[in-house]
Length: 161
Image 1 (cartoon, rainbow, N blue to C red):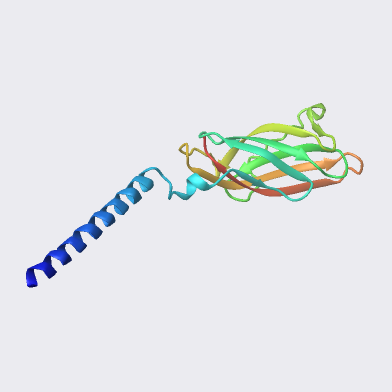
Image 2 (cartoon, rainbow, N blue to C red; image 1 turned 60 degrees about the horizontal axis):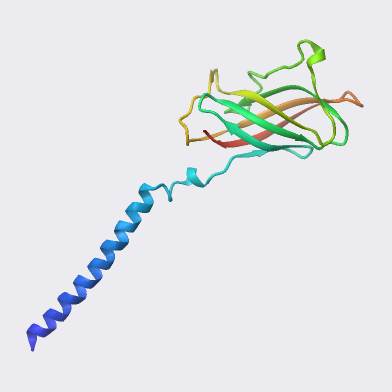
């Protein structure tokens, strides 16, 4: 009678060990495919205050960001400067005012796509494709009707392509 109990216990252990082996193999395959990597889940985001919004953002591995802005303020605006930095500074702002006739005029509801180099301190950003860039977008603009200058700062999160 004793040998049958041992055989039953061995069959029980063998059945569940095969099941655990299959589960472990599936987890290894999913992990190697990057399913559990949070950077694969993160989508590109550009969060700006009300009035100006990002339609899309693409970041190259050399730190060059292509950003499409939508102008939704109450009056037409002129973009006077914009910059992209890993830390929240106004260093390395691009100024399209030279000469003043080259100002970027945006009517209400207009889109404008521009390229801007992103910086990390005193050097340009270089990241591997597939990694995530987190930084700040600073935009200076002037209302055309009142002439009042404004500065808005937004948060950038972009997957590097």
